[in-house]
Length: 414
Image (cartoon, rainbow, N blue to C red; front, side, top):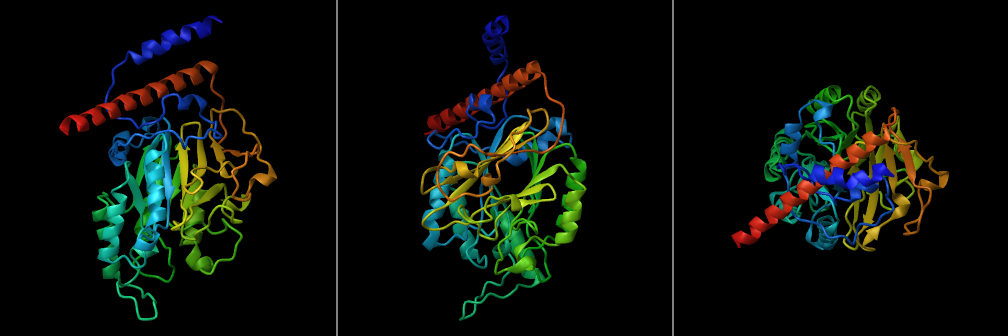
């Protein structure tokens, strides 16, 4: 066909454009198979340049059209509870994130500290986080700020005063070099919102302050056209079936009713990513139809074990979000837990099989991947799809060259 013969010329023309700074790394050719979530990338080498995601987000502005439109992959960990006797599991997760191809950042949804967030505990946390080759985007969990430093002889923790909680929240922000404890990032055609546990008083273990609630309300109102992913320590009420020892008040994010009402008014939110409950692959509620609440799917993030860790990856593009689970013990992705959330401008989704909700922790091929359309929309023309792919390919090639330049600078300095 004449059209196919013109492709090389078009690509050469596009690649002849300048190579400005900016962008986020990705395998340049991987963008051409955007929804092929069965592709195993765990053997591909990663490149270790750390970019400041928050600066990129600030440049994007509030206009959805200005948000980063190329694919962006973020690793997700939770409940690290960093201490010397579980350090092997954390190190395996760090190694995986540093070596997986196309990783742009790592999100940590709380409970970084072992027990009560003493200065010594957080010094160890900060040391380990420094081993990541990508930016760390973290929020606080209850173990990061809510308790006094002193544990009694029976091992019981006590709730800290408002003053101590504020001090621990500020220390968390300072030591992770974050501009704030709550923030948002625009990347991969999505809005990523990071919410801390930060209530200074009240009974629930996992509660947002009024300030964080107002931040969430304002941020969502200003970005109604961007598919939105929220990262928070605790899950939404109703996103699992299992009875937990924490119960509904302490096990779910609070204030539950206000959050649920807010999300109902903002249908652009389609994922809520959280830990807290330590759900792991193989468990009933780790990946099931019960995870969906009012159109928002909760991604339950496993805790770190000494013998094994799991890294969840979320690959974001304007067309879809692809969620995968990587086992550091098996050293591969677990296809049974792959999930695809398609957005507008893409082909109709393949309806998921009822059996795709949750399967045993076995790396067997699952032909019934979960695939959901997040928002309806009109399909693009073939020409629009092609030019969009070419543009994103160029973005990734620019980033690749930028990282090569950064690497060469480091070599020359040595």
